[in-house]
Length: 120
Image (cartoon, rainbow, N blue to C red; front, top):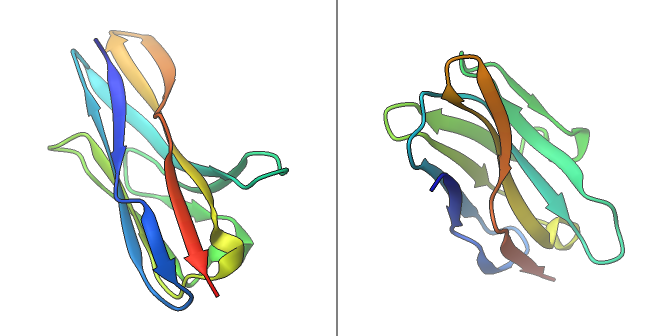
C-alpha cells in the first residue's frame, strides 16, 4: 500500500524551530515533486513549499527566509525545516507528492497531516 507518513509536528514557542518529515512508502517507481501544504482553522489549505525531483524549490512569501524544504531521494523523504516560527504558522501541515507507481502513471498522494502549534 502506497502512503505518505508524516512526523515532527508539535507545540513550540514563537521564535522556535521544528522539523517535519514525510516518507513515501510502498511500491514506487519514482517520486516526482514533493510539497508541504498547511491549513489553519477557518482558512483554506495553502501551498507552503515545493521541491522538484531535481531539487528546485519554491516558497510562499510568508515563509521565505524562515522555512527550508529539502529531500532525500534515497529515502523517498521530504523535510520542512521551520525556523523563527510565528503564531500565524499554527496549522495542520500536510505532505503531498506526485508518485509514479508504474511507468507513465503518476498519481498525487496526501499525508494524514501533522499539527504544528506556535504559542506567543
